[in-house]
Length: 308
Picture 1: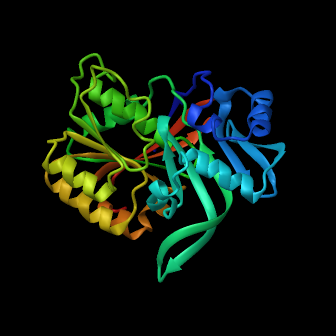
Picture 2 (picture 1 turned 180 degrees about the vertical axis):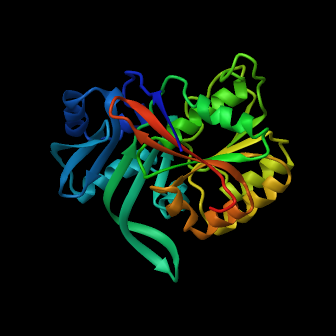
């Protein structure tokens, strides 16, 4: 097991306009008076309860309280007045806004069997705010290079630690060759299912293709068969059917860099889909990330072993 510390920081940009336009003034005003936008990771609104922020990993309670009607108005504003246009993802528990913003949606679900057909009486909204960070992820790039691109890398941690931020930076580094003085750009395809993984990936010199809004399973197939990818990057894997697609892409010689929710390698491998990927030797290393308390990351790198 190897431990590496990496710096992490964000710019002092204002909150995204798509968020600020939809918030009631008394809430946006209190947010401005409470902390710098650069430190806000999440804005949480719950019906008839105090709103709160996640700031540098800590919950900060605000005084503003919104009722259900106000929450519904916020959601409608974020959807630009057309909830129907966002109904498919709302039924999956979220909406995607510009600038990589994802909003979790909670309410009363209407179901047909196991299928959710609508969300009613919105009870809470959780707005995840992405931030630009200085380049990071060289260790992930070095691991991929060390495997001669025959195996990929799986990044894991509990939710909210920074997996998506890390993968964004890795995508830029690999597609530009910026991770090493001697590296060449790789044809990198990002499967951005929820519209947040490709945030801050601008640049004319990037050898980068983004499949935005594609289901991971379908996106991986397209990246492999149609885009001639040299590396595929996607977020939050673990589904068994997705795992089957990943095995197929690996058989075509395309390495994968991905993330999954887990607190340990043991937890990862206890999940059926991820165990299938392990047995198919998809990943050469499992990389756990934690915050180091100083705005950086600590990486725990576990190389794959046949006896795991």
